[in-house]
Length: 563
Ligand code: ATP
Ligand code: MG
Image (tube, rainbow, N blue to C red; front, side, top):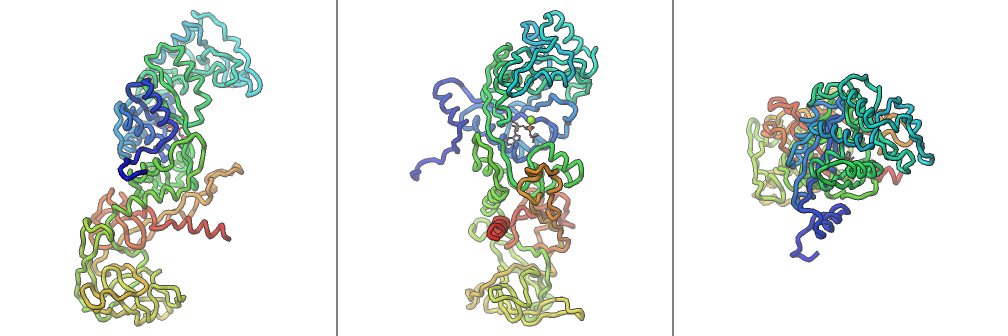
C-alpha cells in the first residue's frame, strides 16, 4: 500500500458482493438488521454479527435495524431485551428502528391466510411424531399428510379456530404446502404456525398461535425492506424456504439471505443454551460474570468496545468454520489499552520493606509519568515513605543467578524513585519472612548524578502509609480444555476450570486509584490492565484484572507442546 492510500475496510465476500450489486445499480441503499432472540444475553459471537451488520450500511450508505425475534414467548423476557439494547449501544452502534417480530403478528397471520387461499398451506391435526416420521430422510422422500388436500374453506375454518383459541396446544399446526419429495428437507411442508396458549411479553394474550422462526424471519425482513439478511451458516439449508415464502407472499420487498461462519473461540462456550445453564446452575455469578464471553461479562472484566470491534474486524467474515484462540481477543484488548491506559502502581501480594535511611514520619511526593511513551498524558505525584510494600514475588532469599529482582545484598530500582539495596531479612521466631530492611542510594534519585546508574531490575511498590487496601480479582480461562464438552460427548460443565477466579483480599493500590469509576481503566505497572468492579466502593475498592501484560497462556501452551 502506498503511503497516501487510505486503509480500506477489510474486504470479505459479502462486502465484495455488495460492491458488485451497487455498481450494477441493484440498490439505492443497504439495509441490514441484527435479529437477536431475547432469550439470553449477547455474547462475543453476536458481536461478530453486530459489527458486520452495522459496518456495511455505515460504509455504503443505509441503515441497520435492531429486530427482536420474539416469536417464542416461553423463553423470552423484557430484561433480555433491555440487556441486548444496552450491549449494542455500548459497542458503539445506533440502530435506525427498534423492531419486534411480534409487531408483525397480524401481517404474518394475513400472509398465512394468503397461502391458505392460494392452496399453499393446510392445517394438519397429526402430532409432531407423525409429522416427523412422514418427513423422510436425506435419502428417502417424505410422504404426504392425509390432511394435505383439504379444501380451502375447511382449512380456513380450522385455522380460524386455531387463532380464536378454540383448540388446545398441539391439536394441529399450519403447514406450508410445498413438496414432500423435495431434496431439501426444509421444503417438505414445513410447520409455519403452532398453537401455544402462552402469554407473550409484548402482545400479552392477543395470540395463542405463534409463527415458526422460518415463517416470521424472512417476512419480517421483507416488511422492513431489508436488502441483505445476514445470518450464520446453519441457515444455509433454510434459504430455499426463505426464498419460496418471499416469492409466494405479497411482501413489500425482496430481501436476500447470505450466510457466514459463526465465531468460535477456544476455552469458552458461545451458545446461549450453554451460557444459560452456567448462569442458572450457579457455575458463574450471573450473566455479567467477568469470566463469561457475554458482552456484559467482557465489559465488566474490562474489555473496551474498541477492542471488541477491532477483534471482530481482525477475524474477518468467511464461509468456513474456524476456532479463534482466546488469546486473540485478549491481544486486541492489550493493544487498545497499551496506548490509552494511564499507568499506576499497585501491589497484589504485599511484602513490607523498611527504608532504613529514609526519614521517619515523612512523605516525599515523587513525580511519575502517567504513560511512558505519551507525555500528553501528564504526570502525577506518588508518595514515598520509610515503609513501603513490594510484591512478595519480587523478593527471593535463595535467588538463582538470573533473578534480577530483590535478593539479600542485591540492588534493585524502585520504579519512579531510586535504587535500594537489601541489607537485612527480618523473620519471626517460626522463621517466616516479616519484612526487609533496605537502604536508599539517594544519589540515584532523579536529578542526582547517579540518576542514570543502571541495575538489572526495576520493581513496583506502594507507600505502606498511603496505599489503599483493595480486593483484586484475577481471572483465568473458564474451561480447562479448548473444546468444552469435546468430541467425547462429555457434559461441558465437567470441563470448568475451578481455578478460573482468584480473589486477593490484601492488595494495595496507589492512593487516588480507589476513586476511579466503573468504565475507567489503568495499567498497574508490571501486573496488567485493571478496571474497577461495580461491587467496589471508594472505601472498599474492588478491581478486576482485565488482561495480563503478556500472553502467559501462549507461553504456557508452547511449553506444554514442547513437553
Ligand atoms: P445461540 O446459538 O448462542 O443461541 P442464536 O443464533 O440462537 O445463538 P440469536 O439471538 O438468534 O442467537 O442470534 C442473533 C444473531 O446473531 C443471528 O443472526 C445469529 O446468526 C448471530 N449469531 C449468533 N451466534 C453467533 C456466533 N457465534 N457468531 C456469529 N454470529 C452469531
Ligand atoms: Mg437463533
